Length: 116
Image 1 (tube, rainbow, N blue to C red):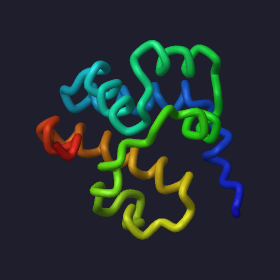
Image 2: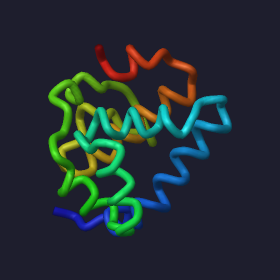
Image 3: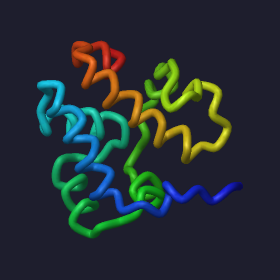
């Protein structure tokens, strides 16, 4: 397995970038939190604890309570890759999160983003 540099990035830094991306497009921090919690199974307190502990991206996903079973329904291209074809499980989770926040920033309704 390739050890990508992104795995060691502090999640708190990535989180701020995700929030900024959404807010630039008129979405809110709470909507970003909702998307992250939906994907990872963290509750609000658990998400904040991970941010405060300054864990890296890999640890954030490895300690996630439960990846949402509907995450496999996330399809499409992000950063030039089809998320459903990514072989590395950790990289796929990272790209799923990127895709969800991208959909949020593009104005997609929350019920469609959360695959309900």
